[in-house]
Length: 305
Image 1 (cartoon, rainbow, N blue to C red):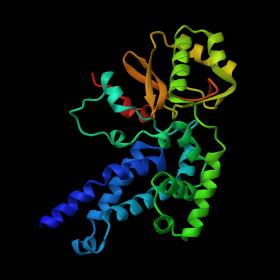
Image 2 (cartoon, one colour):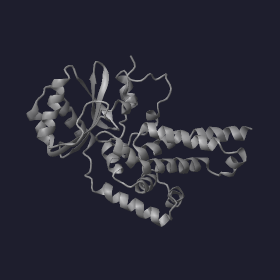
Image 3 (cartoon, rainbow, N blue to C red):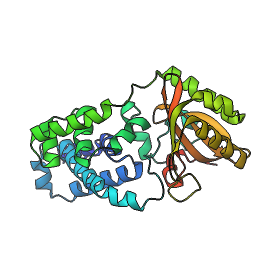
Image 4 (cartoon, rainbow, N blue to C red):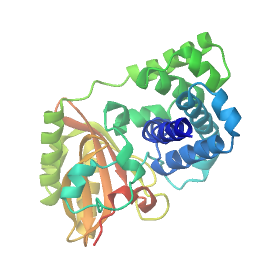
């Protein structure tokens, strides 16, 4: 009985790692949580004798979770075709930072987003690149390059040979390799701070100077709130759009907060989070802005009254 209890505790202790794997595979906290819950339901649906036959429950849960994510990624294209406007990954707060700003109640139930380790593999720029991969490439790349799983184990997830999985990861790696190296953290923070100041003062000239001439801004409203449905291209056009937003929303409050572990901005109106903006910075200028406005994706950013 004691060994069974220890085994059960060990299985439950895998949840954090599984959430981290699933979020990187899916780009959605909600879907990651559902995938992990499904994997656990399948585990507990096994007979005790079958559970005891499995030498590594953690590896079994990882395989099942990854297969569930692979199926979801396979059906994502059809779901994205029905999505209104651009689809962006769900943004993650730095929970300790956001709590100090009056965020979620630390005594409440654990939020799945709180379990996710904020490193370079969840930066918005990285997740957007992952979206360009095929489902099989993404699974092979994330499991091997991010979580260091051997190709022999990944083969069991994808139903392919280890050699084929290695090729998939290499193909995915080439997609990541074409992106530019990120700016140092301090440099990013300074640029984002200057963007905030220029946005607050509606200084178009200053914004244009901070934006790369070829910058692109993509917004995700999911058809639930007003926003541009197509990317806004060009620093000058983005600056004009940002000032127009400020004109339409008097009293908009901007906060400098980490978004997926990288300096970003959070826009509040009457204390409610309306937009979470992530930035990519190169050579002292903003090259990409991802503005997530879909309220269904801002759950982890909700503040208690």
